[in-house]
Image 1: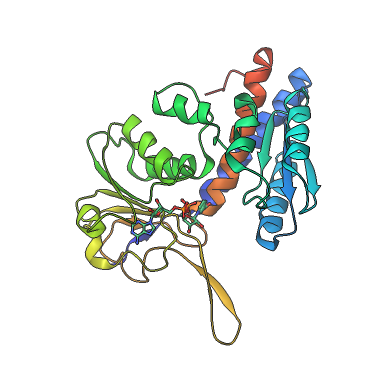
Image 2: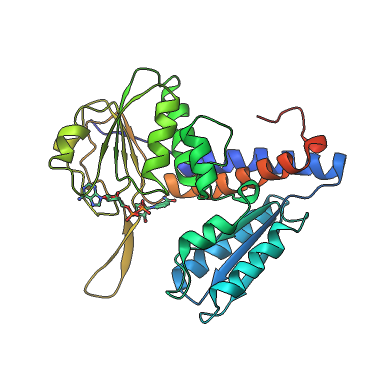
Length: 295
Ligand code: NAD
C-alpha cells in the first residue's frame, strides 16, 4: 500500500484564486487594496528567494506589496523606526520582517514592535496569547496551512489523537493550539523527548516539524494515520547538486492513509496563508469593507 499524496500546490492554488476574487471585490466595492510590507535585511540568498516569492504572490492576488530591502549593517534602531512608520501607515495592512535577522538586531524586540493587528506572520506575543486563549488572532501561516490540509483530508478532527514533533513558536506550538481548538488529544515531542517514536505511533494525525531529515521512520507511523511533513531540509550531494527533503524518511509512510510531499505539500500553503492573513488584516482595519463571505 502507498499513502495518498496530499496535493498542497493544488489546495494553495484554489485558496489563492478565492483570495484574488475577494481582493478584487474589496477593491471594486470599497476602494481598499490590501497592502503587505516585506522587510528584508541583508543578502542571505534563501531569504531573498522567500521574500521575492511572497512579493510575487501578493501581486498575483491583486494586493500591493512593498519590499524594504535594508543592508546587513542596519541597526536595530533603524529597523524599529521603519516598523513604527509602517505601523502608522493606513495603506499597509500587513508587516512581515523576514527571519533570520543579523546578530546586532534583537529578534524578540523587533517582532514585538510590529502592531499585533498588522502581524501577518502571527509571531507577536499578543497573537500567540490570543491563539492560546481561543480568541480571534492572526495565526502563523505554516500551522494555519497544515490545519487547512488536515480539515480537507479528514473533515471533523474531534476526538482524534494528534502528535506534533517539534514545538518552535513558529510551527509546533501554534500547531498544538490549533489541534486543541479542534478538540484533538495532542501529544508533543521535542529534541529532549526520550522516545518520540512511541508518542508518534499513537497518533491518528502526525505533524512533523523538527528540521531533521529522515527523522521519522516507518515504525513511528500508525497504519492509517494522516502525516503532515513540515520539514524543509536541503541535501547537497558530493557532486554539488542538491534537493529538498522532509523530516519523514522516504517510504516510511507507506502504511499511512495520506502524507504531504516535500516539496509540494505544506510549503505552498504557507505563502497562501500569508496572503489570507493579509486580507484578514485589511478587512479588520476596514470593517466597512468586509464582504459578506468574510470568515
Ligand atoms: P526549529 O529549529 O525552531 O524547531 C525545531 C523543533 O524540533 C524544536 O522544538 C526541537 O526541540 C525539535 N526537534 C529537533 N530535533 C528533534 C528530534 N530529533 N526529535 C524530536 N524533536 C526534535 O525549527 P522550525 O522553525 O519549527 O522548523 C522546523 C522545520 O520546518 C524546518 O525543517 C523548517 O525548515 C521547516 N519549516 C517549513 C515551513 C514550510 O512552509 N513548509 C515553514 C516553517 C518551517
